[in-house]
Length: 179
Image (cartoon, rainbow, N blue to C red; front, side):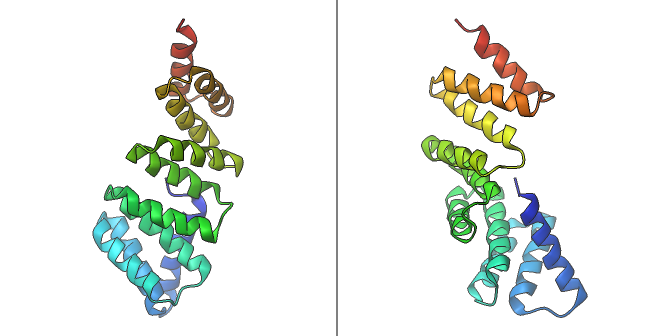
């Protein structure tokens, strides 16, 4: 779920820390990144939070830290806090499709399907790299709500973008076979 752009930021933070003595905030961000790599998400949240509270981060660094902390929150299944971090990211980068996609996933996990639909739509609008996933997930929500026409339209769009993805074709075959 982590966007390619944000993953690159995590790598840059790690490089900065390995190449020179870094500010405390970047050191905390690097410690958090290492904790994520080890699967220690609670520790990652603690260090990402310290980095944010320090006030030493640029907007770009803060964005990377919010993205990392949101990822850790998702792994801890604390979707409400992940959503808060995605909200912060949207304030910093309102046209970043990956943030909308990931926030949609958290909304869906919490059962807030209306918000998930809106965020999947935003992810598609802003050109999410794997937009077939946004179309597929949005189609699944439409299907669960009984809006089969919208579901089929989204699954067809997803199929156009990823014709080798078997679950998309399966969905289309099932829905188009229904009376």
